Image (tube, rainbow over all chains, first blue to last red; front, side, top):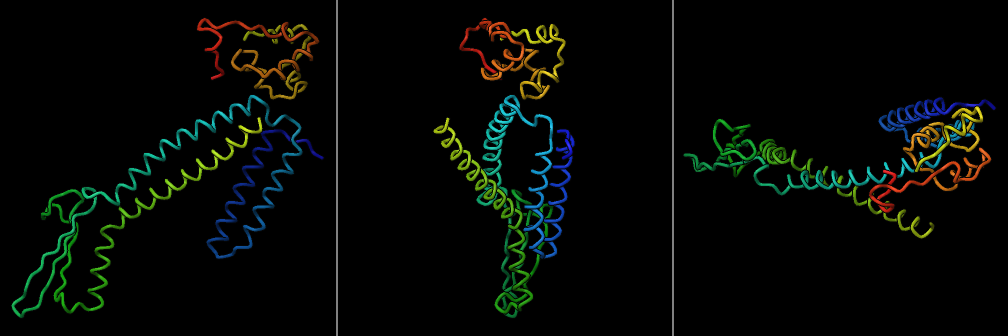
Length: 195
Length: 75
């Protein structure tokens, strides 16, 4: 048995955490799901084994009080900040001024076919050449070939992709907050009854 | 809350590290208590008093705040 100092234990814990994270990330990217199954429990075991060797006091009542206060403050800050971020990000999905302005100009050609020019302008701007982001023309609207149809769909889709991504981020943050609050509430009631 | 830990330690030629080890806390906790920055629990207070072989009222002295006892906080 080798006595270990607290700082050494913390350094080893950090090293093990980095190694496990690197191995898990690499194996997931490589499609190998066996490595995390072995690496994570092994990492936890190594950290606990190191903890058992520490001769100094790792935590006491002051440390616990500080941690609990910090956790409470963190929860408060994350809840308020997360709620604001979720609302702002989700508002992109339903926001008209923040969405790109997409216009379609229908033209009846001399031969009777219909062509359409679709243009995307900067969000919240008036349609005009100075605000034009990009445009495309479909020569015959009634006889779009596959390439033109894909271009058209991609065009419309791409125009809203950024907003949809932000909306998704907002939804994820909102759901994360809900889970965080539910977990905290469960623990709160548990300890409220216990002590 | 005022305390005489520093004096009691000096009388017994005891270091903060030694006291921390005897009561089972970190040295930082002893430092904070001595500086009146941290108010220990009753249990820890009794443990410290027992190490010095005195009563708890010989180690800790309660001083009412100017704002009154209800205003005391460990913030």
